[in-house]
Each structure stands twice: as structure tokens, then as C-alpha cells.
Image (cartoon, rainbow, N blue to C red; front, side, top):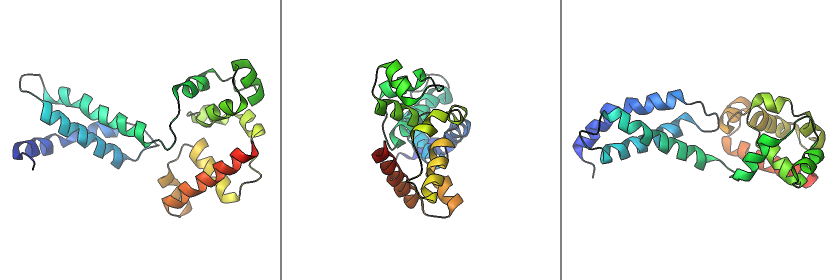
Length: 186
């Protein structure tokens, strides 16, 4: 059972969550999910706040941000190790996958995995080496379209589902199938 005073304070301060969520720009996570996570953070802040600790908003924002960041980390379908994330910063996009593997002293699959998680659209546009290394010939048209929208244009599965007019669950299934085809090809 919730404390009525906490409920009133929650309603009074819900604008903090809206403010934080609206300032964030994450295409990979829906705003509704970020908002819900922020509400959890706001509730935690309300339960832990003691009068005299300064302004409540100053106290609450780190709680809200913390829950939102946790949601973003947990929402990723595939967890990427820190080694892969660090490796992608060292990639030389003018080199082929094999040349990068030799230069960085890792195997070819590790380089391909690092390339797969390249986040910036500008950097992805320069990945001519990736296009030479992985052929999309074995993919059907819809698979090519969805893979391009998801990985190269950083669109969410929901955005893709609305654009193509199919359920989001089908988009997820098609991405998994296409990635499996690409893995067997390499």
C-alpha cells in the first residue's frame, strides 16, 4: 500500500521525469520505457529523500537518470563486452576486416562483431570494407531492408514495423534470421 503523501509528491514531481526523458536522445529504447524507468527512479528518490538535503529536484534527478541508464543497458538485445566496445574505437575503416584483424591482433569474427556495433551513422556510411566483406546476396529484399534500417540507420524495431506495416515481433524475427544467414556466410 502506498503512502498518500508519497503519491501526492510523486504526482507533483512527475514533470522531472518528463524533463529528463525529453532531453535524452536514444533511438534504441522507446520513450515510454524510459519514462517508466524514470518513474521508478523518482519513486526511489521520494522514499529516500530527507528534508534539509537541499532541493528535491537536485536530489531526484540522479535517481531518475540512474534508472533510465539501467533501462538502456538492460534493453540491448545482445550484450556487448567492453573489449568489443573498446576495439571498435581502434578500427581503421579504410582497411579490410582481415587487415584490421591482423593489425589489432584479433580474429576476423571479433572485427566483424565490433563493426556490427558501430553506432554513428556517419561512421557506418564509411564502412565500404564491411560491405565488401559481407555479401547481402543470400538475404531476401525485406531482410536487406530491415537490416539496413536497424543497423545502418539506427531505427528502432517499432519504427521499422510502422514503416513496413508489419508487427514488431516479425521485425525482430526477421533480424534474427538475417543475422543467422550472414553468420553462416562468413
